[in-house]
Length: 345
Ligand SMILES: Nc1ncnc2c1ncn2[C@@H]1O[C@H](COP(=O)(O)OP(=O)(O)O)[C@@H](O)[C@H]1O
Ligand SMILES: [Mg+2]
Image 1 (cartoon, protein in one colour):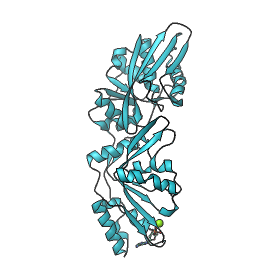
Image 2 (cartoon, protein in one colour; image 1 turned 180 degrees about the vertical axis):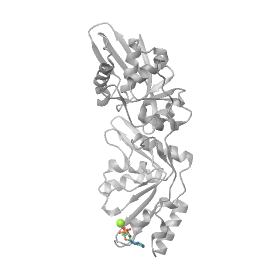
Image 3 (cartoon, helix red, strand yellow; image 1 turned 135 degrees about the vertical axis):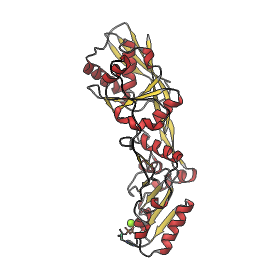
Image 4 (cartoon, protein in one colour; image 1 turned 90 degrees about the vertical axis):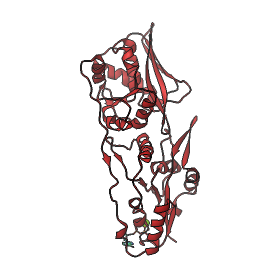
């Protein structure tokens, strides 16, 4: 009999449904995971085996096949550990298979069976709610996942706690959303002496959402003024807060479920690569221009950035989103920013 557990694959800030099916068949012991997983997914088998041992649970002496469907969607990351372990446990009869039918699960396992934090709990929770499912996630991700509002969240510290919950011996209580940091007053424009024209330009740029370039000799207060732009901008609207937090969640930047209403201010160094600025790399992570979504991207010493890096910003600045190429897919991230540049003449 095949047991099924739902999880998600991240495509930018979208989380797409993935079904994890586990089946035990006769024959020699084998533990096989198929379905276009990356290296982390392949290694998941070892973590699941070790976590089962930690629970005192022997793997059945059969052929265990785990299928990640749809097979043509690339599966990247370590958050497949938990759904794979749950599907295998359900196939073994350790957990009643139908007790998992209302849930999606994400989480990485440690060798002793603890469920470790993974990135993307917020989009996973939003996606689970969209599928009319609750979300099972690591305890550390609970406050973040709970921000999705409607979605039921089960935040478990370990595999054993989850088994006990589903057996009804020890129920887990639902997590509360993490704290909300209000847009506190950052550095104040009042501290800038003189420079009336530049200050006026900064205020106009803040009011109209314009891009801005400062040109002037070293020490004239360009960096100082740029850092004071977020303080002039209004706090994020609830919709913007969700968009920006989704990007930060996928990047693993939300600590303890704390969201902030302050607009992001990102100031990448001029040695930053194109991938660091616009996103990319092995896991197609969001770049600085997306981490600054709904906020300010400050490029200090603009001419020192590589021509390639600057060129790569052209498209996101025009369209408000960035398309990152990955081996066999394109990933889209939002990237609506106010660009502030500074340079010496
Ligand atoms: N107009 C100004 N009013 C007050 N302090 C200033 C002003 N201009 C420069 N400073 C001081 O000089 C320091 C260096 O300025 P900075 O903003 O780094 O200059 P730039 O980026 O143009 O090279 C600031 O941290 C600040 O202490
Ligand atoms: Mg400077």
